[in-house]
Length: 140
Image (cartoon, rainbow, N blue to C red):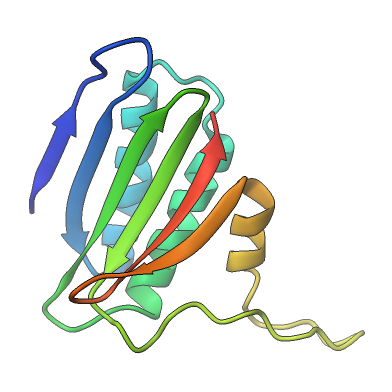
């Protein structure tokens, strides 16, 4: 595993990156490490960012998993916000818009990205040379 952590140089700023195995345990660890890092930065209201990390990490290990390849979680501290980035190795499977729900028929999934959209000020997908990065900006 690879970890890169920088401490803020001023009142705002700082970056944290950690590579984890593409497993459920790796997704859970991504959330726990992100929460600890945000606390180390002195942030107190981290609930929204925690949920966004959890959802994006879960999507990376569920839909973006390539056997033998890790995923990466990255946090960038800004003025009043945290940018959450989760990168995986799968290029051909990007986020899709959720299906239109049928009244009276609950869906078994597909709630994650609408949750990310509701909790963030912006989110999107960026291609990489290998894989993709799904990012979201959350008010901190």
